[in-house]
Length: 257
Length: 88
Picture 1 (cartoon, one colour):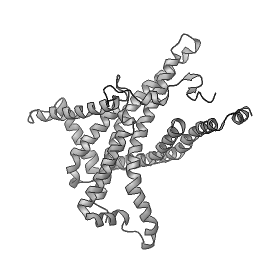
Picture 2 (cartoon, one colour; picture 1 turned 30 degrees about the vertical axis):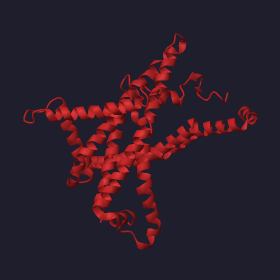
Picture 3 (tube, chains in turn yellow, red; picture 1 turned 180 degrees about the vertical axis):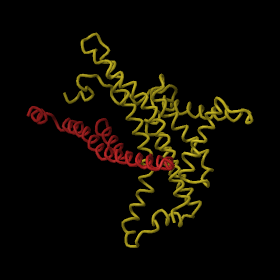
Picture 4 (cartoon, chains in turn red, purple; picture 1 turned 90 degrees about the vertical axis):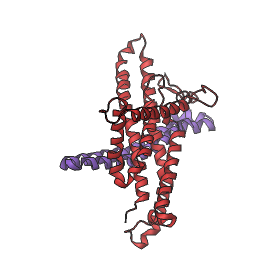
């Protein structure tokens, strides 16, 4: 009874290793690596194609998508968080947004059916990259001492409270930020993937010739609804990751005085 | 009563697994209460702010998503704890 932990109400639920771990296609290259390579190529191809069009003609097709996304990142992310001086970060934020979004959206594309960000490696690497970048940008703009002073001793706090504030700021700025960035993306996509698997398994289990097949529409409708919801989550998580990166970089470059 | 007598019969390693499986459900359920209240309140206030000042809707929306991201992180850490307890 205790050993069969994966049997939920007599339903044969797949083990987590079956849902998340894929066999190697080539040595050292599994589905996750393939998805991230595909998303890199797709992003590059989109902007190469968009950049080669005649700039004087009205945009359409790939260039329309590229221009709309650049507008979105500039107006919706950079201008809201860093102001005009942060516009130099647009290419980085844009490529990161596309990479995360394409890695997320594969969770609902048939034949892929697996968000590459639902494995910890990609979110952890991206969070480390962001950590290095915002600390590097802060040190470059304010110097090491100035950056540490502005991030650990925020101005406007009574002197005695620094005993409390400084350790909290130290932990939150240098440890919790990259951790929560990585875990947020990873856990959101993993949760979405497991939800889709759950309702797909339920639908399949009810696809039988018995009387309880009358309940079949319920998990199926839920599955369709959740697939749409996952599109929203994939976009929102890419957006949140990008905007948090922009906030961290903006805060490191221009501290509050 | 039956569950308790079953629990007494099984060995140490199985007992740990048993406990982990039961607490896994509670880990996520309890972790979702606070963020649930928090996100509801946060979005409600943001909608109110947007309704009162539609011209600042863009700024409110950005800040709202930031707040959601921070609040939601707590629930997601609970979800990771659930995964660790259940499968690790």
